[in-house]
Image (cartoon, rainbow, N blue to C red):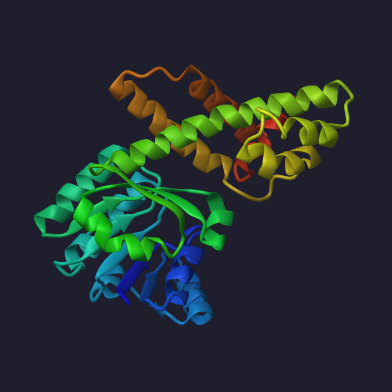
Length: 289
C-alpha cells in the first residue's frame, strides 16, 4: 500500500481519491476549499491537509486533478507547491486536461529536483470517476508508469502509456476532437427527428442497433430529448479543452474545421446561460427559435 497525496477534489478528483482510500492506500488530500477536503476525510477516512506542502511531505505518489494550465503552475511550482516540498523519490501524476506544453514544462521542473512526472488525463466523466471506470492516457517513462500502474488501476477501466511526457495530453485532445463532432452530429440528428414529428425515442432505439451507435447516443440521447442538462461535463470545460486542441493544431499544422465550428456553437450555448450545462446541450441552440 502506498503513501499518496491527492491535490484537487472536484467532481472528478473527489471520487478518484476515494477509490484509492477504499483500496487501502494511505491518502492525504488538499483542496482549495478546505471544507471539501474535510468532508472527504470524514467520508473516506483519509487525512485532510491544511496545505499542499503538508499533504505531499511524506507521499510516494502525488496526484493532481485541477482546472487548467494556470492552476497546475500554481500547485506545482509555487513556493508552497508540490515540486518544492515533495520527497525526492516521489512520482508526480497529473490527471488535469491541460496543454502538452505545460506537462512538458512541469516535467522539466520536477526533473530538476529528481522527481518523476507523468501526464495522465482521463476520459469517462463524473460517472466514470464515481464508478472507477475511467480511461487514462499517460505520457512519461515506462519505468515510472509501471511503478504507478497498481495505483491508477484503482479507478481505471483502461490504462495506456502513449509515449513521452505530453503524449497523454495530446491523446486526450484527440478524444475531445472526436467527441465534439459526435455530439454535434447527434444533436442535429435528434433535432431533425423532432422536426419530422417522429417518435424520437423509437428512432434512437432503432438506429442505436446499427452503425450510428455511440457512447453519446447510449448515455445522452434520453436527457437530450428531455432537455435535461444539469449533469455531466460542463460546456465551460469543453470550451477550455477545445481551445487547447485548437492551439495545438496551430502548432502541429493540423486542420480542425469541425472542432473550430463546434467550439463556436458552445459559445452560443454559453450565451444562452448554459455554461454549466452538459456538453450534450448543443441541441438546445438548434431548438432555439
